[in-house]
Image 1 (cartoon, helix red, strand yellow):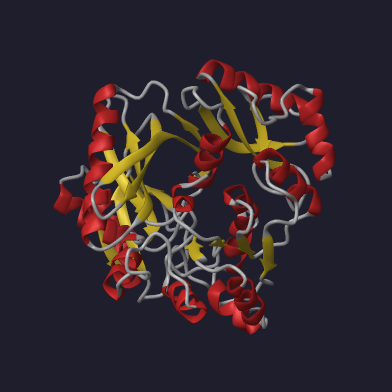
Image 2: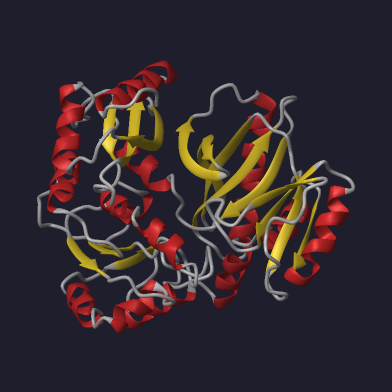
Length: 424
């Protein structure tokens, strides 16, 4: 279960990956790619819940998830919202005449509550239209000021402003407009051999690029009114992230781990972190709690993450925060839910394993079973196919869990071999 299940009533799990909170809605191809991860939300369900997803969920994937969760097939209602360019997913429901079917499902579930992936204005308006609360808000809905604070903290500049107030160590940098970008980049290159240029509102590394002193401009000039952040590059040995949870009473750290990166984009996670110096880990915990305290004071309730990098000498630098359900919250929830009762929380990881050739979902599961990797309820370790069949049939998202990191690494090597590739 997840903490939101502790309250009464069914959850309407709203996988609103298409949200202006993280990125401009005109970035259609990126939003479509992110939406392919929406099937993972099925792992959060219990009997009676409703899932609203931007992509279809296959019968094979539903059967696979429900068997491992121990809930009856057909006990969870699913509404699929077709791809709708430039519209937040909450508004796309009405565009495709899906609001009335959703209302009917809600009427059948007294006490239902909305659990959005991203807390944006459209999702809160949807909850009001359905006359159900947004979980976990004590008053049922967040204050408009809270929504503004959440939107601001999901920008690089908004995070940097709050981080400075809280005393978090940041890379040397500046926020600017597109018109100022060339001048600001040049000024920072005078002090740093390399800088990183980031769109102010973006996630997963989208739109980020590096400039080294002496480079010729490789990027076209952005719109003059666009917003950017330029930072001196921090030479680091690992990227780490902590997941916090804010309540009215306190902010706590749920877990932490090391982010796997590919071409500056998030590609996976391993928890707990390995070889992170103890002082850096304590500092990451302290910073995450301080950030959660600030969010709680703004009225925010729920999960958030703090992303940082650690240098060779153990110095930690905060980079950004994500005030929403992130790419790791569902994985952590399913690991906690499936871990054997009475045993310590296992080590776990997420990533993408590439098959040598396209596979069906059932064939991929069979490959795992043949290799002795297919996780079943009650197992101490194994691999779970985290999302549905990928569009290309080759890039399989997974979650692995094991009692310790050595065994976890072994599982990932065996997974790659089972799918026909060498290495994790």
